[in-house]
Amino acid sequence: MALRRTQKQRLYRYAVYAVLIAIVIWIVVSTNWAKIGPLFFNPAIAAKMLPAIITTGLVNTIWFTAVAFAGGLVLGVLLALLKMSSIGPFRWIATAWIELFRGLPAVLTIFAIAFIVPIASGVPGQKLGGPVVLGLIGLILVASAYMAETIRAGLQAVPKGQTEAARSLGMSPMKTTFWIVVPQGFRIIIPPLTNEFVLLLKDTSLLFIAGAFIWSKELTTFARDATTQNSNATPLIMAAILYLIVTIPLTRFTAWLERRMARER
Image 1 (cartoon, rainbow, N blue to C red):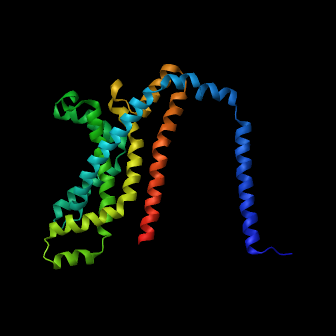
Image 2 (image 1 turned 90 degrees about the vertical axis):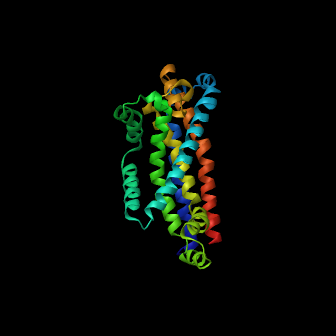
Image 3 (image 1 turned 180 degrees about the horizontal axis):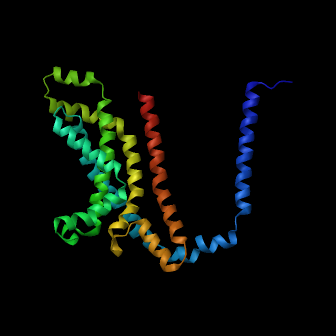
């Protein structure tokens, strides 16, 4: 007797579930928990790390992310408008900036700002703000390049009829851009900008290349140093859990925004 299409789909779904459950059981059974537990999930070391890993590592990570995001957003808007400009040199400058900092790995950009710029300018790094400030500047430059392309795409997605209507009412090109195009464009790019925030949150771990003080360690650096001091990887697992506690709600919020905007469209 031939199965109907719905029955075949149901059987296929059950088969996939069974395979996934079998894989999970195999991983649980085959893992050497007696050896992994003390090395990666040591309750005594975890208790020792609290609350410092939250009050120092996590708080610094969120603070650095917020600063880099705000700086990158301001520069990103400027670069997006320059790239859309009818003036050739403005477009060339914006394009060169975006291609440079999108093409270089973030860790190299942070390294260059933290070490090459002070040497080239002859000004000691401490007078330029120290490793934390210089590292954040490097992260801002990287963020601005990626945000600029996201913002430009959002601004260009605004229907041209909106611009034409504003111009017909006597608004100048600049007023049309800042009062009509930019607000509508930002409404479109909120989800990708939220994703950029999540990426920046993880990229703060690259600030270690610039050096850090005890009070300025972000989450990964804090956990890495604690792992070295205790000869145990539990702090790294704790850092991973804290990252997930922050990033998962953000990604779920982004998905909700995308669904809501899709319904509105």
